[in-house]
Amino acid sequence: MFETTLAGSLPKPSWLAAPNVLWAPWTLTGEPLGEAKDDATLLSIRRQEEAGIDIVGDGEQARQHFVHGFLAEISGVDFERKQRIGIRNNRYEADCPTVVAELARRSFVHEREARVARAATARKLKFTLPGPMTLIDTLADAHYGDRVKMAFAFAELLNAEARDLEALGVDVIQFDEPAFNVYMRETVEWGIAALERAAQGLKCETAVHICYGYGIEANIKWKETLGESWRQYADTFPALDRSRIGQVSLECHNSRVPMELIALLRTKTVLVGAIDVASDRVETPAEVAAVLKETTRYVEPERIQASTNCGMAPMTLATAYGKLRALAEGAALARRSM
Image (cartoon, rainbow, N blue to C red):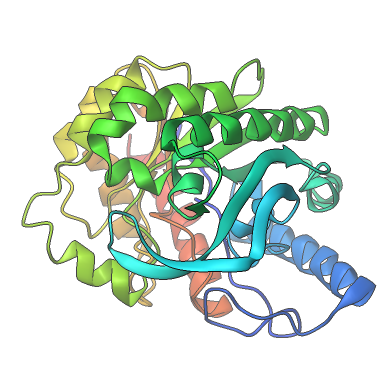
């Protein structure tokens, strides 16, 4: 009951990358960079364990970005040919690489960091991958001419990557799909089917992370336009509950998501975001416990895990790991009160 985990990214140490920003440039190159990524992954896992996190991750220490880290080993994507396009339904603009040819995976993309992470801990290990819809929403297309066709092409590559991760001993594979909170009709029409294709045949736990984004200015401004009640999950949860994905990770704390929407997830493990990533204030254990206990009004405690709202890459190390300690202590407090 109330196992603890994290949504994905954690801050990188300053000896690896520029601190407190997304897309942080690396401080090293070549094999020294690879060694530094290994060290940062090991350190991230150790800090998670010390904070009391039950299901740990690599903290995405070897990736500059949760999408582009995977794309680095995908042929057919031209990083030199960038186009400035609106993403997440024009929430903001970004200079995005262009798909110029048939997509293919050149190698096992995340093998090195997955091996390092698996060897570093005896605890359950989660590994995150971008979902098909979010991938295509972060790229310009000069080849497929069809969003759905390109999404399913990525789903096949993601499935191959996920199967390799499972074979290395990863316990939970999570697909990050913030686009599911933006394109609700498309999510139901084909997005969940593409997600299921990415997870096809996996025997490990599978999860999808749906959130309102990192705590960056563009996302915070977007949230201000969503009104007093954020009901996007109402469109996607019933369809996700019918899917073969086992876990759903969502944003709760300090959001305007009506908690009763969680009741739409009748059969899934629910990863409750009890840590706000849009604030540098570290939650108290009592605040975390209150979020979890509120969730039990709609979901059986045995189906609840305690998590963060989203990744914490732009934060300081002290803030991020302070929040993870609060998450673990709050989950323990909630357990004792049940």
